[in-house]
Amino acid sequence: MTSAASNEMQSVRDLLFGGMPIEPTDALAKSLREHGTVNPLVSGVPGLAAVVEREVAAEVGGLLSLDLLDLLSAGWSRYKALTEAARRTRDATKNEEVVAMATHQIASSHHPTVELFIDGKSVGTIEVDLDVTFDIAEVLAVVREGRLAEIRSGNCKVTATLQVEDIVVAERWHKFDLPGAVRLRQGVALIKPAATDVPPRAKCRH
Image (cartoon, rainbow, N blue to C red; front, side, top):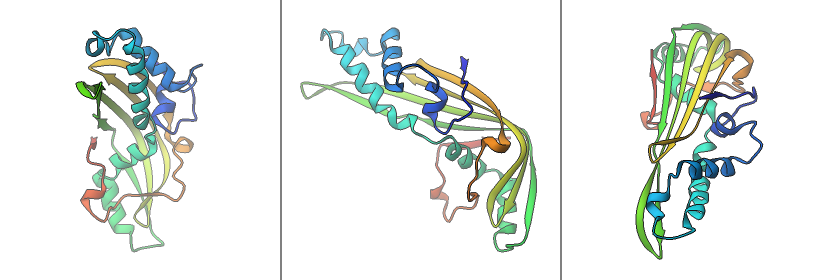
């Protein structure tokens, strides 16, 4: 596993492929080719593997565009101390609370599939797995008006692992200090109007 060098990361794409000399789709297709990931599905059709590798790489593009702050916020919206502070400050516009957060982990998992057709017939399904994990420590978070308004201290290690057919095709991590790295803009809503508004696969461990 390698570390991402750039401090300007906003998406999973930036984390996994930032700083590379080739485009993410090309890098992913190259990795699929090196691992022979799609070969079992197209072994009877010469020359088709390269086409399938490009198509799978393009389909995974949607996962790569996921915003890291959105994933992190989804986990924090389930962090009990933050949501309780959000409820207390929601209607008290002049109040703020500083929450000391225990060392914790936020994990977000995504498992789409790509179905492969040849001459109109399905020849198999390609399983894709993306796991993004945030290991977070020493956080002081400021909550105002029901929103996460500021991070005053803390550090985070974020790791992303992309697998296709149970083969790791990309994996990188990056460690950074949260103040300044996490731009909260207008703040992050911590209280959702309904439970269904919270992304279902994000979970927080502490």
